[in-house]
Length: 344
Image (cartoon, rainbow, N blue to C red; front, side, top):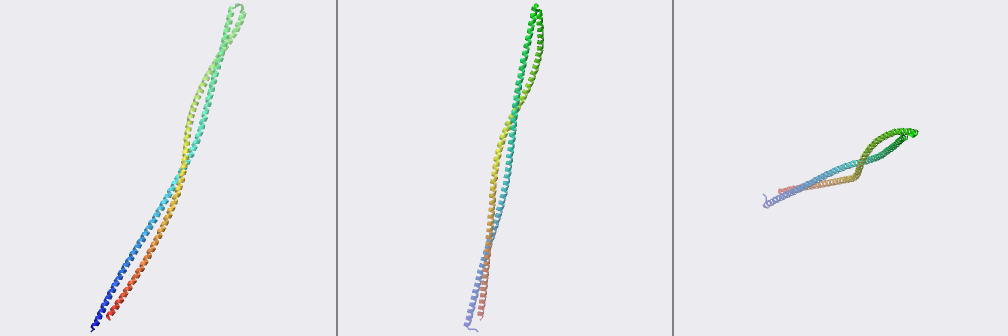
């Protein structure tokens, strides 16, 4: 049997061993709890870093999509500007064609005006010829009337003289021979008077024919003058219409020239706007590329930082696990030592 003192020491050793084992277990539990907290914190940090990296990647993708959209919009604007420039060129070509057509119309109007003036001059010449013909007919008529009157007067004088001679012969029987001679002369005069009468009749007929021809020529000349006057009036109206058309064509040409100048200015403005749009599109594309590169670099840096943090967390977790394992081994060794001491 053991002595009371030895039994008491053995009980004390067992109590000390129990306390040491309990302390070791508590320390191991504390270390395990700390390791669990550290691991949870590391996992939370890694999760946060991964979420941040995913957010950055999504933002980079959004920026890239926005850059692509901006580039597509810039391309659309450039295409629209090119279309507008082509339309402006077409309008300018049409305006130039209209100006050329207006110039041709002005030339034609000038030619028609010259023709109308020539027709008016011809009408004036015809009127002058008609007036000359009328004057000539009047002169012929007057000459015929004067000749017929003179012949009639001469015939009447001859008849009067013959009658006087005959009366004298009848009243004076003593001068019969002389009267016979006078009668013979009077007869000759009467014959001459008859010839003169026949000539007068011929002259009268000729004068009537001349008058009829003159009337016919006068009527024809008057008809020609009337037709010429109508033609002159028509030519005058045509000249007025041509002048109005010429003025309208000149106004159209001026308007077409103004439209051409405006189209040229618009084409220049459109070209400048197209160049500005192209420059803006280039700048936008460059900015989008820069933003995409910056976002990519930021995403890469974030991913590298996340990888570094994950590696550090892994190393810390590994070190903590090693420390926990060492502490556990030390606690087990201490427990074994205490148990051995208690048995001894």
